[in-house]
Image 1: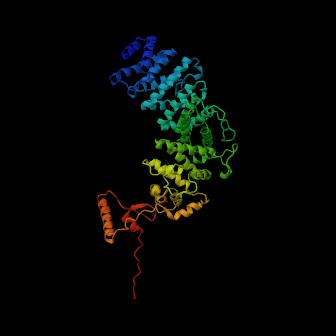
Image 2: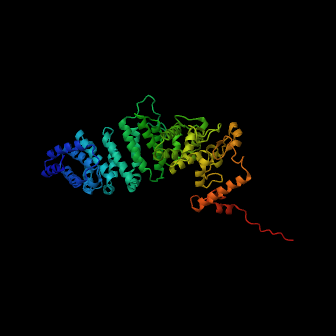
Length: 537
């Protein structure tokens, strides 16, 4: 479709003719994401012309067609100049019926027909693209208080306007993700946390049976519908952004506990597919990671449903869900940094703060040792999988796995080495200055872990570096003469010396405080001071 023909029709003022040409253009380019550089100027003029038509036309079908074209064009960030202005954003906000600073939008309830609602949805989609692709549009949106206007609109959007609610939430997510000032304003001045909490309650059909306890899902109930799942995901993403700002007043503590209760409910739900269920649970875990750790008692304190006497009457269903989710992400074997580290961090911090959660996870992940014939990283148990991650190439992943196991061991170096071996734990111990042993800084309860009889009998034969009983190896010096031994020792010294002089290796030692230092410095610090006593008559 020729852009010049469309531009000529726009200049002629025949909106019906414009609509006809744009319908053809939209059909041809609905899946276009890469545009011809030669037509860049023409597309900029078309963006400007479309805004002109949108301001002068009051025909819903013409408006929605123009907006669809503008949405296609907005995939190219180079042509957004005319749209990413105050006038451009005001035009789109007006069609989306968003009340912005100094300009009142039309209430959504006045959009009676499907054509009018289509205009609102297309305008919201355009705003999403423009805000995402243009820093100027983000600034204009902040100046016009676009996010605040969206919150006002969301108060009145009913579930029957699904797409309007969905793309309003998506735009709110983008604005809060791209502008830290907008994020802070939404939390402190607009009450967006409460608004989005209410959206989640309605969407997930939460029924409270206690202060922060939702009724358990009906096993016979249908999974969450696709529409409700989409809406909940957008609300979760926006809420994640907004809760990244610190807030510690009493009202916010109540809201954050409500969120924790809703997340517990969501983790118990299933959607229409396994992939969508995992995605929903992933967003729930990300949001829980933002909450103050003291709020996480809501996950296990559900008096109406009851709990396990062994763990102080606490309900561990959610903790088990987190553990299952973590193991599933490990088994996927990819995207560990984004997919695995949030749940590892959540379980680490909740275990550090909540004794019953730590005790439960310790029993599941690090049960009492019996068979120590294999290395800790070999096998298919959760412990084996986590120990393998302790030497992962990605620093965040290896630190996350090591820290989780360390906390389960109450930050005791001896306990950690028992389950992992010194070789796997060396990175964590070096980072924490615990190579010489000891404990971390967190104080834990005094309950003691008892070793099994099998472990006690095998302990003297365990190689502390590898963490397992090694088969006897032949002694390489057995058939060597003393001269051969001396020759091999000197050869090794020469090789180390040569590599050190080339700075390919740097011999290190452990200081008294458990940190690493160059070997000479470490030996000097650990050497006893020279005696001041002298032999005298």
